[in-house]
Image (cartoon, rainbow, N blue to C red; front, top):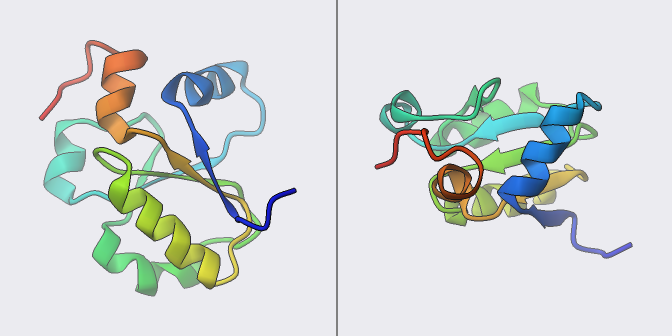
Length: 111
């Protein structure tokens, strides 16, 4: 296993995983509320990036967490931050909700 606690997941891979009903990871959306209001993955929890340091104590560091943003940049930064706080099962959604809309859900609103 890699020493890197953060792995990448393609939208199609996450979609398949969520459809199987297997133990679902926490979907942590780190965008701003106005972005979340436009579109988000069903069941995701909104915690804007700026609030992550305060919210980290309420998250389970052993839980599998998929971090989501618009294009996958902010979410990757949050993953690395959480890894430094002792989180061990972090997944960055590659391409964010933009890639999800393109690859999985073309009806999803875009911005």
